[in-house]
Image 1 (tube, rainbow, N blue to C red):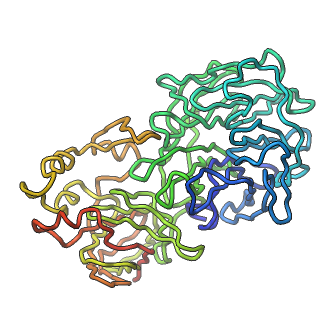
Image 2 (image 1 turned 120 degrees about the vertical axis):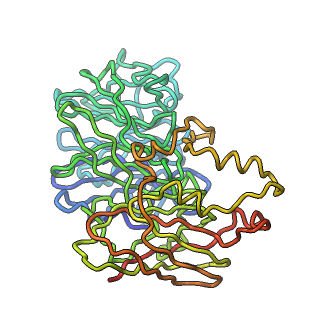
Length: 494
C-alpha cells in the first residue's frame, strides 16, 4: 500500500511498529474522520506479512474502555479515551501498555500479538509526586536482552522506570528517573517515547517540541542514559499541514522504515498512519527520511489513478478531507496552492507527449492547473500569483508576506518556531524548488474532468500541481481564500 498504508477510511495514528515472527504489527490510537477529540475508546490492531507489507489485515478491537459489539469494556475504573499504546513480547506472552486519558494506566496481556488483550493490572508503584498523577503518558516499553523491562513516558517532560519482569506492571522501587530526554535544546522533548535496541545501542525516538511535527532520536550505551541527541528522522509538517507526530522505526525484512502520521480533514485530531524508507548508516545514525506518497510501494504507477489522500505536499491551507469511505478529496484549494505527490516510475516511455487527466468537483470558478515534474521553482509561484494592487485592503501586509521567501515551521500552538529560506527546501524534504512545468490544464465553472497534453516523461519523477485562479484585476482580492475546486485524483495516459 502507498501512504497512507492502511485503507483510506482507517485512522491509526501514534503507530508503534513491532515485528513478531513473520508479520509486522501496528499498535496505535484510533482517530475518527469527523471529530474534535483526539483518539477513541478502543485500540485496533493491523498486521501484514514481512514478505509483503502492502497487504494489511485487520484484527479488530484488541482493547477497549467502553462496550463495543462483541467486545465489552476491559476497564472497570474508567471509560476514558485510549491514547498511544505499546506492545512487547516476553516469554511467549504479549503485553500491552495502555495510556488512558485522565485515568491510571494499565497493562494487559494476550497469547497472540493481535490480542485480544485482557487486563492484567493497573501499574503498582510507590513513586512520590508522580509527574502525571499515575497516568503514565505515552508508554514506550523495552524488553532488554537480559530480561529486564524498562518503560519510558512523558508529556513535556520525560521519565522512565523499570518494572518487575515477573509481573510486568510493578514499578521497581528506586528505578524512577526524570528527564531521561531533556526538554531543552537540542533535545527539545515533547512526547511520544519509543525505545528501540539496535546493534547493542539504545535508541529513543520521540516527538520534538520545536516543531512537534518532527520525530527525532537520541542514542545511549545504556537503557538508563545518558542519551546523545542525533537528529531528525522525519518531518511530517514540512510543506504539509502540521500537528503533532508519534511513531518509531522498524526493520521489515531487509529494509528500515520510519512510521509516523499525517493530518487529514483539516484537523490535528484526524490522523492517518504513514511509513517511509529510512537508511541506517554504518556509524549507527539514521539519514533523515523524506515524506513521500510511496509507503510500502517500491514506486508508484502514474498510469493508475492516484488517490488524493496520497498527497505529501499541500500548501496555502489545502487539506485532505473524507466525504465517505469511498470518496476522499483535497479541498480548500486556493490561488497559489501546490499539491505534490512523490514518486512515480514512468518507465521507458519514448514519446514526446502524454496526457494528464484530473478529476474535479465543486468547481465554481475558472483558472489553470500548472503541472510540474520534480519541483516548482519559486519563479513560477511568483509568475502565476495574483498581482497585489496598492489601494486594495491590507496591500502592504500582503506584499510583505509574499516578499518573505522563507518557509515557516509552526509549533503545536500555532506559534512560528523557525524560518528558513526557500533554498533549504530540498534539504528539508518538502516542496523541491527545482523542477520544470510540463503542461497546463484549464478549468472552468462546473468542470468535473480536465486534461492537458504534457511533456513525455520517463524514469522516476515527483508530480506537482500549482493552481492559478483567473482573477487578476483589482477586484481579485475579493476571491482570496475561496476554494477553487475539490481535487479527486489524476492519471497519466499515453
